[in-house]
Length: 288
Image (cartoon, rainbow, N blue to C red; front, side, top):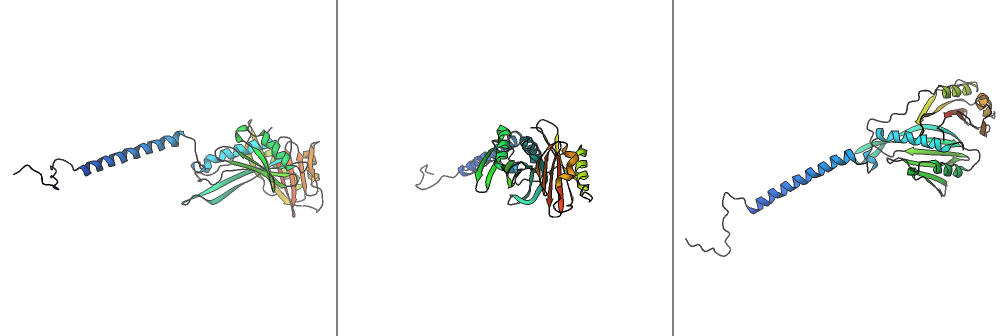
């Protein structure tokens, strides 16, 4: 047989040698597997060593303590410039972390009553006293001054006026995976606050409702506590101050009217008449 190769003729490949296409496919599969293993290793390392880069990487049980500490910082930032009270926590369920995953949002906050109507002045003073890393600042918009800050771990802080001489500052997680859920700080040792709430409400002639105690850790140590309760409002137009003579003991009443009473003492007292009810909050705050 002639050794010449006809034009256009491809010599057969020996059976013991893979075709060039099959050899390239094996290299491609091997490279893909190696790349996948590298990405998995980097992801494992990042999860265990890197800080979270998006809010969805922190569940509610991880973000909750950050919110609690933020409430303590806000109370300390009020100082002697107003009468504060921790407001009831709010858990909003059913938000979307991803299109396929439900989440929950925690909001905690501090209400403050000041002597005058300058809510912006209080917000600016609080911003100056908050930790520098929060980058707190106050800007004025059409509806008034607004305090904004970043408490870390994607916890947003916002404060604004809710009426003449009244401010509400909140810390919120945004929508998070629930994880094991939120556990509120312990409120042991709130006997003094609870007793003052009950005593003052009985003054109005009716039994005090259930007492709710809210707590937050203070930046310098210790725990801040607010006891809340309400009862029937008593005679219309009767000043609220009469129920708090024992608590006043020479302390300064920041507000004193038929419908709002704010006492800057230790503990601080905030009483408000709403329709036919009187609501009272007694607070042991964080030192400035």
